[in-house]
Image 1 (cartoon, rainbow, N blue to C red):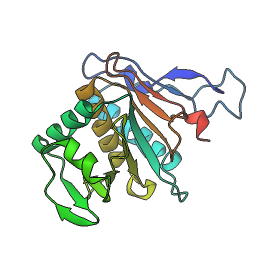
Image 2 (cartoon, rainbow, N blue to C red):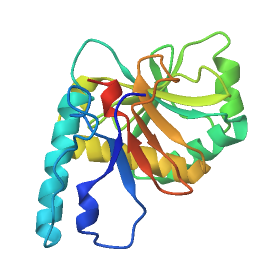
Image 3 (cartoon, one colour):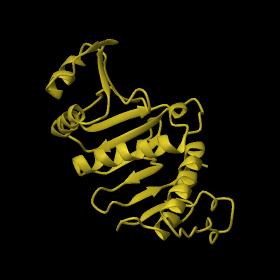
Length: 208
């Protein structure tokens, strides 16, 4: 992989103890290998929040450029039990969701097995957070939990942070890594979160 890691400047100010947040420098591809993005030094929480918003806004333009393709989110190596845990969480969470069968809104079944059985003859879709992120899942297989999002819906730094918070929450819930990828490209992640180390990695040189 081209590029190099550098530590997120947010760590210059840490509002609470945290694990490292690392990502690949988006400037290093066209520049010498030693090039790095400027490190920012935050003196207080206000500066931290300001620079964080700037960084997330830049990510919305780079990773979520509206190029006509979707972005995929994967939790790999899952089971029916993992799907069930996630659905149980959604019922109790503040995330709004809508479940449809063949395009018609229906009550979300208690058991995910029912959904996979339905999918043998029907189209099933779960839409999460329609007013903000529009995260869709179609229950393709038990072996991975997958969502898709349209980049046009992730068009601000606030929405990037909301999406990342959703991904981190699901990852910690299942204690499994979660990745963000180009459409149908689970082997080419742009972002990865590890729930054990709480490290986040951006592979931005793969995007540019």
